[in-house]
Length: 624
Image (cartoon, rainbow, N blue to C red; front, side, top):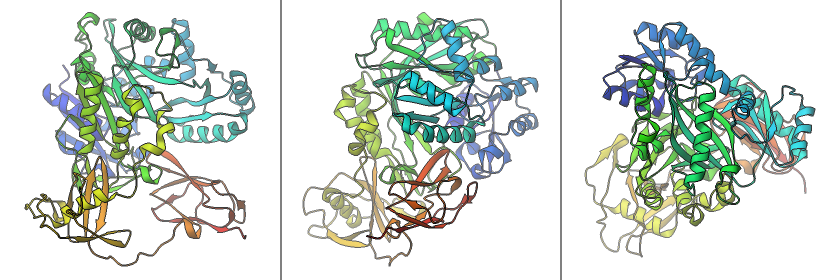
C-alpha cells in the first residue's frame, strides 16, 4: 500500500481524499495557492506546500510545481482528485516519469478517451452505441454549420477537450449557430486550451445516465451500477442520485455491460465514469441509450455510488494504484437502498445565479446525512475557483425516503453572508414531477420560475424573524459576536424590521410564524428557512449611494476577467443585447443592456481584470 500521498487538488475533494488516506495510515501532503493558504485541506493534511498565486493557471494547473512539491516532501504517489489536471495525460505521464505512483488511469487511456470525437469512434468500434453527430477534423465555421443542418436542429456544440459543462451550447436554429459557436470556442480555449468542437444531435427528452466503472492492472473491470444526473443547469449537474429511477434490470444489464466494454476497450485501470444520454420519451430502454463520453477520473457525485454499494471508491483507487486487484468482483457488488446528492453552490438564484464570494461568517450545514465540504465557519469563498462549497448526501431505503432526508438536510442549511442555492435545491426536491421521477435534463429550465425562491420573505417568515429579534439570549456566540436564540419573546411585543431601508413592525404573536432558525447582532436579524437566508435590519443604516440598471450603468457583479467586449462606444443597442462577457469562478457571465439606447461609455477592454462594482459600461436610454 502507498505510504505517502500528495493530493494535487483543493477544497472538498482534497479533504475527502485525506480522510480515507488517514484511515489507511497514509501520510498526506496538500498543495495550496495564495488564496488557499488557510484552507481546510491545508489544515487537515500532514504537510502542505505553497505552489503559487491564486489563479489556477499559476498554481493548481502547473504540473512542474506539483511534481516539485512531491519531490520536496518525499511523497510516493500523486492523487489528482477531479478537475484541474486530473484528465491531463501529459501530466500523468510526467508524474510517472518522475518516479511517482499516479493514482489514476494510464496516460494512454486518458488520451484515448480525452478527445470526445476520437473516443466516439473508438466506442463505436467496440460495439458501444454512440450519439449521432459530427466528429470530423474540419473545424471551419461553414463546415460545422453545414454538419449541424445535416444532423438536424436542435444540436449541441461541445468542446472536443471539454468537461464539467464547460464549452457546451445548445442551438435550436441555424440563425443562432454562429454566435453559439463563437462563444463555445472561446470558453473552450479559456478552460482547456483547445477550441475544437464536435456537433451532436440534441435529444429532446434526455436523461443523463452514467455508470461507475473500475479496472485494475490484472485485467479485471467491474461496474458499480448507474447514477442519474439529469437535473442540470447550464450543463452543470445539480442533483444526482443512484440508482437511476425507472431503470429495470434488463436495461441496467445493457447499459452497465456497455460501460464495461467501453472500459475494457482502453485497458482501463482505476476509477472512471462512462456517460450516456438516454431518450426517455418512452422510459428508459436499452436500445435508446447512447455513449456520450468517458470521464477518466473520480466524479464529484461518487458519494451516491458509495452509499448504495457500501464501498469507499477512494480506497479502491489507492489499492489499485498500489498494484492490488479490485477489492470486489462483479458478483460481490449489489445495490442497497437509494442515495441522492445535492451540490451546494455559493451563488444567488435571485440574481440569475451569480456567484457569491466573501467570508463565511455563519456556516452551519447541520448534522444529518453525509456532508462533503472543504470549508468551515470563518473561511472565505474566493472568486478564483468553482463556486461549489459542499455536497449534501442523503440515503434511504427507497427513493422517497432519500428525497425526504435530503430536503430535511437542506432545510437546516445556514450560510451567511455568502448566498447559496439551498432554497433552490429544496424547491426542486419538492416538485411533484421530481418526486414522480418525471425528469430529464430540461427539468430545471422548465420549472425555473417555481424553483427560484422568492427574494422577499412572507409575513410568517417576518414574524419568525421578529421572534429571533425579541428572543432571550442563550449566550451562544459565533464569529462576529452573533448570538443564537430561543422562542421566548414577551407577549404583545413587536420590533421594527427593515428590508432595503424600509421598516415595518412585526410581532410573533400576530399570527403563526415560520419555524425559522437564525441569529441577531446589533444591526440585523438573519432568518433561515427552507434553505433560504433573509436579512432584516434592526437599525437604519443610512442611504447607500451607487449605480444601478435604472441609470444605465453596468457594473461588474464580482471580480473577474473581461473576455469579450461586444459593442463599441456610440453603438445603438437593444434591451437584452450582450455588451460584455465576464469570466469569473470558471464560468462566463454575459452583461446585457437594461433597455434600448446608446452606449455612451465603455470602461473595460477584453483581457482586463476588474474588481466587483467596477463600472464597465453606461447605456443612455433611447428618447421616446
